[in-house]
Length: 161
Image (cartoon, rainbow, N blue to C red; front, side, top):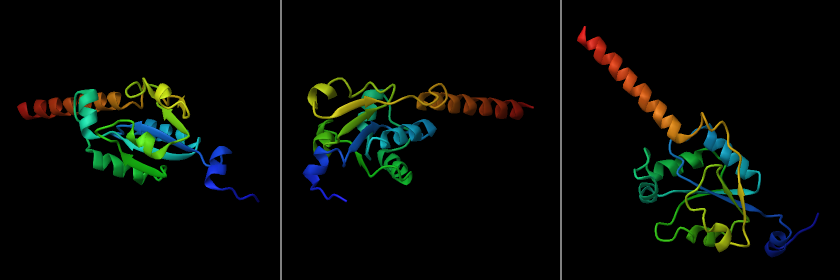
């Protein structure tokens, strides 16, 4: 058995870390698949989007607040570390943790434009989709809203009798 210092192990790729970013609202099998794929590349660091960031990027707040989304990710026991993103500097968490790999979702477009340019020493990969026509938060939200509206209409029709 060989024993290496942290610096030596890092150079030999024995200690890889992989970082992912996301909102992780309405946690579903697509998210879990994404996290498991990322974890194959090393110890997983999950960065949860802040509520204010989600509002700015998506135009609305997530259903669940950042604290609840962070707890949900931690409860999966997939991440070595899970943290909230930095409101002032979107790159601060990358600088702090210096991951070996940043794994992006198949459809992740926000926050990705300058990563390769800004972090030349970090490998950036794009992971595969997992049933994207079924497990995508926007689809799940649409289906939940549609189902909710159908139930309301059915209840209202029953009240009119």
